[in-house]
Image: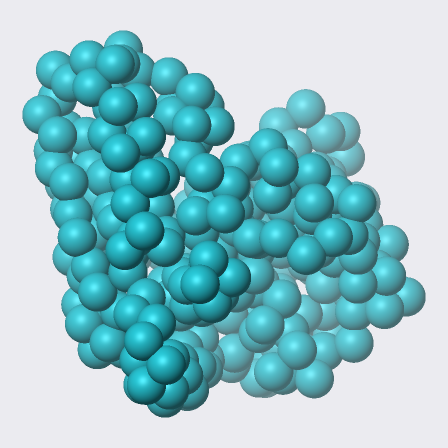
Length: 281
């Protein structure tokens, strides 16, 4: 039986620490504040924004949201970002994805001041991560690394395999694992004989968005399995990218879905906002 890596409990512990830190910052007149921009009315995004607002509230971080209509023009979005870049009271700017198809999300991310880029998507922060310099790291990968640390999982010298190469999770996580001295392989939709590669992993991360993609025959006995996927089945049940029932007896550690990596993402976002507030003051 694998040890269940409880992201919900760990995130609660982290949030409690951050709440204390915010109280201390307020005593020296630093009031961390996050601005969230949402374009259009994507239902899942609405839920995420609500969760972020709730967590900010709980920790004591000020929160301001900017809800823009679906038909928002490029100039309007970029002008709003520039306005928020200039506002001294705002330390973190987050653009909730997805945004409507007619807008270029990469251009919008690049317009955010890299010192306020609490999502870690700006090319300067991506570059800093690549060369091992201090910057903002994408929240989900940062959350995964924190979980590995918390559960005492040795990364140095281990074989890590990441399935998925998105700019949000796969690539930054592969870089973080590499920076922590793991030997890293990234698999994706064009990878051949994927099971042969995943079976060599001491740490296997699934971040590809395919329900129950990772099955027992793809996992080495005693591996640590991190499931980043969140997929909804036709019955409305949440499942990960890993077939939990099959894989759990083989793994030494495994993250559940829900309650694994998900809660860590928001905790790391809050940590980034506080970091930005300290650096900008």
